Image 1 (cartoon, rainbow, N blue to C red):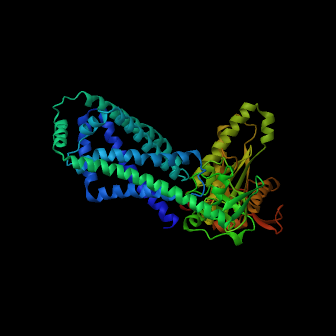
Image 2: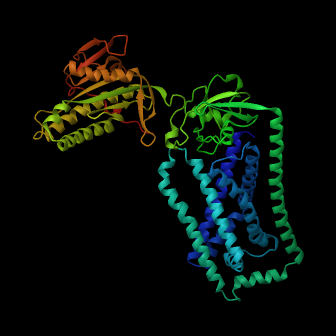
Image 3: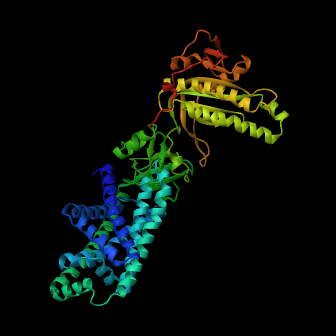
Length: 564
C-alpha cells in the first residue's frame, strides 16, 4: 500500500467515524429537552446504523483507522513531533480503551443478550455509577478533540478553508457543548424516573432472564479486546526497537543543515523531517509530516546521486507548487547518503503564506502589466493642506480601484501616487492585454468624472500617465507574511514602468508597447508609432503614443473578468 492509498484510507475512515460521532452528539444534545426526544431520534439512527451495509462500513472504518494508527506509529523513525501531533497520538491510544468498554456496555449488551436498545436505559445505566458518567465525558472530549484536530490539519493548507473557519469553529464548540448539556439534563432526569418505567422494566426483565454464561462471555470478550489492543501496542513498540537497532548496525547518512551549520546524523529509512526533529531544529510542517501540504519543502545542493525518486504523493504535491527539480519534501525524503539542505519556508510560516510556489517562490507566466502615476502630485501637496491631499488621493485611488475591478485587473503594488496592476493572471495573455487597454480607457473616463467633482478644489485638472507592456514575468506571492500580495517581477515589468515614465516626455496619458497591442488584436493607423530605447533592454522597443482614449472602443465581452 503506497502513501496515497494510506492517506485516502485514513481520510475516508476518519470521515465515516466523524459522521457517526456528529450524529451521535446531536442525538445526545436532545437530552436538553427530554429523554423521550433522545429516544425518538435514537431509534431512527439505530435503525440506520443497523443496516448491514452501514454497520459493516462503520466497524470497518473503526478497524481501519485504529490499524492505520499502529502503522503510523511503527513507521515513525522518531517519536519527536509537534505538541498537537503528540496530543492526537495520545488521544488515539486512549480512545479505544474507553470505546471498547462503551461498546460492550451498550451495543454488546443489546446484541449478545438480545435486549432492546433505547437512550433511557443507556443513560440510566451510565448515571447509576459515577465512574460511568466521568468516563463518558472523557470519551466525548477525547473523540471530539481528536476529530477536530484531524479535520483542521487536513484542511488547513487548502485555500478554501479560511472561508469556512467562521462557520466550522463555532460548530466545533457548540456541538460538544450541547451534547454534554444534553447528557447532563437526561442523566438528572433518569435519576428521577420511577422504578416501574417501561424501558427500565424491560432491561431488568431481560437481565433476569440472561444466562450467566452469556454475561461472562461478554465480559471475557471485552477483556480480550483490551488485551489484544495492549499486545498490539507492545508489539509495535518492540518492532520499532528492533528496527532501530538494525538501522544503527547498517549505518546512516548526514544531513547538513545550512541555516544552523549543523551536521545531523540520521539512520537509513529515516526522513529528513524526523532527523531535524530529533536534533531539536524547528522546521515547518503544517500537516504534521504526512505529505498533505508542502510547507516542509527544502532545497537540496549537489545530492542527486543520493536521492530516491519521489513517490506519487510527494510528486503531486511538488507539482502543485511548481517546485524546482532540486526541491523535495522533508517529510517524505529518505536519502541514501549525505545531503545538504536549505529550508524554503521560515519555521514560523503560516499556512496561507506557505501556499506560494516553491523554488523561487513564484512561477514564470506571460502577463500584461500596467503602471499608473498621478502627474503633479508634488505640486498638489504644496497647494493643499495635508488632510485635503489625503482626501483627493483617496478619491483618486477609489476611481483606479473601480476601473481595475471593472476590467479584471489585479492591484499588485502601491507607491504613494500610483500603482501597478496585472492582467492575464488566468493564463489568457490576449484577453489580459485587451483588459489592460480597456482599463486605461476606464481610468481616463473616471479621471474626467473626478475632475468634474473636484473642480472647485483643484487649480488644474488631475492627469495621469499610463504605461502598458506584456511578456514573461515571475508571478508569485510576495511581501511580509502578515500582508502578502500577488505581484510580479522581471524585465517586462520594468519596461512597463519605463513606458509610464516616458508619458512625461511625450506629453501624453498612455503609451502601449506594440507587442501588447498586437496581443490584444488592436490597431489604429492614427496612433503615432515610435521606436525607443528603454533602460534595462538592449533591443529597441516599438511603442504607440495614444493621446485620445475617447475614440478607443473594445468588445465588452472580451474584457469582462474571467469567472472560475
